[in-house]
Image (cartoon, rainbow, N blue to C red; front, side, top):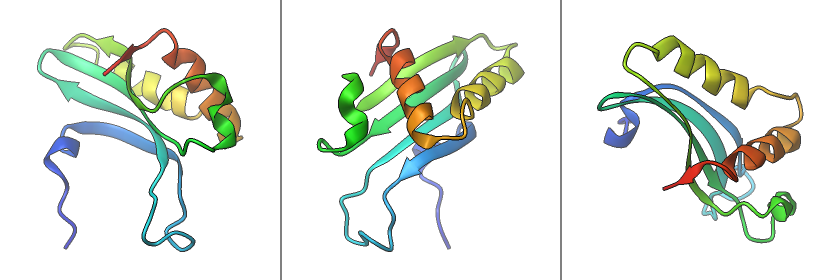
Length: 112
């Protein structure tokens, strides 16, 4: 049975935009891009988790790998936080365009 990591239990919504194919690279390296909304101690946060290879062609934006706080909402704005995460993660049908758009948002976001 797959156990949910403790750090993921407070996720309200999550979408993996892109990840390495485990069939092609079963032993790694494992790279991914995801957007998620989670409950924090005093509200809700929308996060961008960026883990791309250094030689990935999508690294031209200048954004570094890391976790970016894209938006923060108060305790009574749960639905707005989830909606924001969904809109960011589904902004285009092209994965590369979604990553490029989120990288633009990340430039003004707080990197953790």
